Image 1 (cartoon, rainbow, N blue to C red):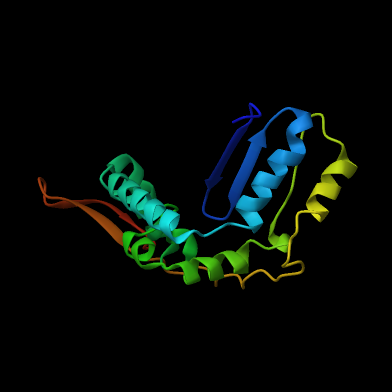
Image 2: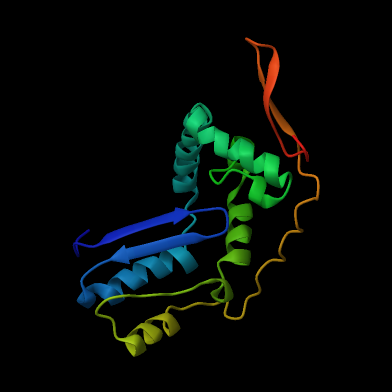
Length: 178
């Protein structure tokens, strides 16, 4: 904020994006902040507990909104037990039970240089950016990505929507021919 920069992050089913917009002279400082977030997170237990409560509240709000929830139901119907069938926001039972050690292990296995793409646009000197990446203090160089999950079953989970008013199934997903 002190640089007049914007820093944000987001997740989808298969990636995490951390990005910043700033004046070119602030690139080294902004990159250092992002490197801390991606490769050197603090995992402060008191902050983790506060964030856990926030995420649990977000999950509860999300699950109460049919316009959001329908996409997770569809994903589960299409992909079954495959990770692509899971909600991006997570499940309350998993978020509620994940301890600091589990979070550190998950992070260490996935946020490795072989899984990270660094990209820049605008008034950026390529060699200077490469030097920032090399100096980022990444201790897990050459770390391996976790094994990819198995492909979804040929017969995904079946999910049907039953209307109580008419006592009829309106939509069934996941089973061939329905």
